[in-house]
Length: 423
Ligand code: LMR
Image (cartoon, rainbow, N blue to C red; front, top):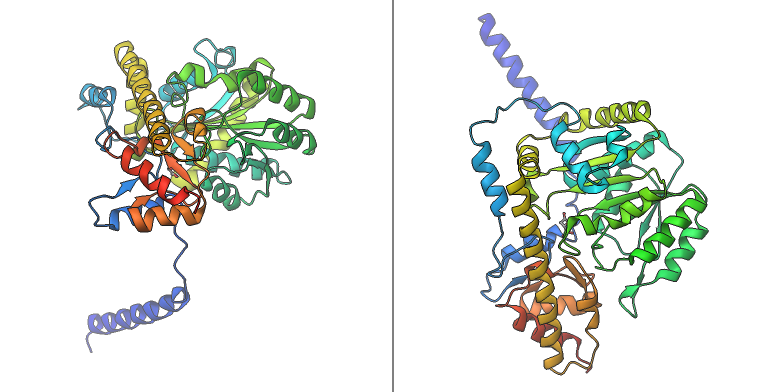
C-alpha cells in the first residue's frame, strides 16, 4: 500500500476516535438557565404579537421605540473614517480615551489625574471593568468578600461569583416606600467588619432608581472612613440620573474629597449609546504614582489571558467625542435629551395609572431616577403582564423606562392597573 494511503487511513481513524471521545464529555451538559435580563429580550423577539412591548433590557429607545445612535457618534464616525488602522491597542487600552474618561469621573482638574495616582485600563464596558476588578480583588486580597446592595443588577452576582469572591449583602432599598432605607444601609455599613469591600452604584441605581442624596452620601463616606471600608463604584449610568454627567459623579467626588482610595467602573454603553462597542474603563486610586504603575501592570496582566487587549473602534469614538469641543457639547445635549424623555415618561406613566383610578400609590415612579422604575410588582404580576398583554420585563418588577413611549404608555398603564388592582 502506498505510504500516502496508509497515512491517510491512520489520520481518518484518529480523527474518528477523537470525535467519539470528545463528544462523550459534553453529552450530558444541561442548558444554562436563561439570563434574567437578556433572556427577556429573547422572549420578546420570539413573540409575534403586534402589541408587544419590551421594557426589559436597559437600552435607550426613542419615542417610536427604536434604538438610537447619537448624532455625536454619527459625526465622530464621519470624522474618523479612513483614519483608523486596525493595529492592536496597548494591553491597557487607549491612553487618550482613558485620560478623558477619568476626567469625567474624577473631575476635569483632578489632582489625582495630574499626580498620575490613578491606575486605569480600558475595559469591555462596565461588565468587563467589574470582572477585571473582581479578579484583582481575589488575587491581591484573597480573603476579602464583597458587600453587594440588595437588590442589585443581577450580573453583579455572576461577576463576583466567577471571580470566587464570597458575597455578602447590604440593605439599601425599602420595599414599603420603594425608596431608600438609609437607616438600614448605615447599620449594615457600621456592622460590616472593618476594611470590607463594598460595591456602590454611583448614580441611577440599577434596578431600583433609588439614590442617596448628597448629604446622605457625605454620611456614607464618613462612615466608610471610620470603618476603613473600600468603595468600588459601578458608574454605568453617568448622565442618566440628572441629565448632567458632572452632577451624576457627585457621590464619587464626595468620597474623593474625604481622601478615599476608591475603585471605579465606567461604561459608555448607556450614556453614549455604545452598547455593542463594549467600551469602558476600570480605575483604582493609588497612594502614589509608583503604586499606580504597579497596579496598572497587574490589571493589564489580568486582561491579557482573558481578551489580550481591548477593541479599538469604540475607544476612538469616545476620545473623538470628548476631545472635540463641538462634539462634546452635542453629546452633553443628547444625554440630557435622553434623560429628559425618560423623566417625561415617568410622569406620564404615573398620571395614566392615577387616571385609571388605581388605588395604589405610584409616587415612586416619579421619585426614582435613571433608566429604571422598580415598580413593586410581584413575579406573578409580571408573568400576567407578559402572558396576557405581551409586555416583557424582568420578573423582579423592574421597568426599563427607556422602553416607554408616548405610543405605548397608555397600554402599559392599563395592563399594570389590570394586574395590580385588588380583587
Ligand atoms: C440592564 O441592566 O438591563 C443592562 O445593564 C443590560 C445588561 O447587560 O444586563
